[in-house]
Image (cartoon, rainbow, N blue to C red; front, side):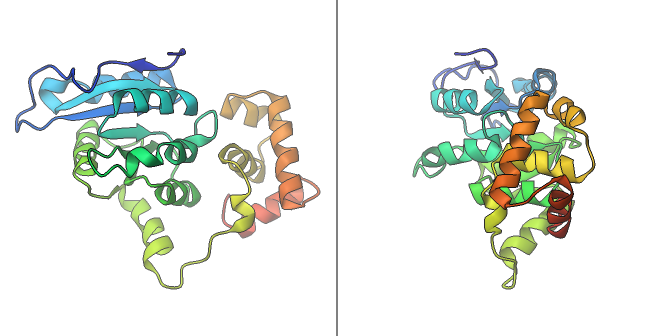
Length: 241
């Protein structure tokens, strides 16, 4: 496997002693920050105490699909913002595994973002829940087991986004203009609208300034806008800022 992908076991190799009530869940961590993955592994991956067995890790979309396909975990902890297309692209490519009649792979988004469009995007993509990275280790373990059992799990503030988008009969329609943008283009758009300079955006997203410029050009073209000021007004009108 390429760098960033780590498979820690196979479906048949889940040794160790189950946690107190005997429950066990096999998990893959998908996040592009190695230190964060290491921290989550240390916090929840003590299988004897938590019942969580981390069987693989990945740092981008291609790696995620590879390791999820190889290990077939019960739950994937999925970051929303990933190189290669974001968490939504992982969900799209893993749709057959989510829909499997037996032993489906379920996804729980774990992200620093609490933006409504990020939450709605991954839930539309098939994730069973969305929690932010402020969650405690104990609550994260509980959320993982609930998702494994088929429940939907959300951080309290985020549940309202989902209710507004899916439960209300007068929920706003899908924004076709916004749907033309890739996940990365949306990230760049949001930061532009917040007043970030290209260099600041590059640093924030771990990409080059030239790549930022290319994304901005693509956004302008797709939305038929002329400059960053029009982008800001467009994003503000849709409450993306």
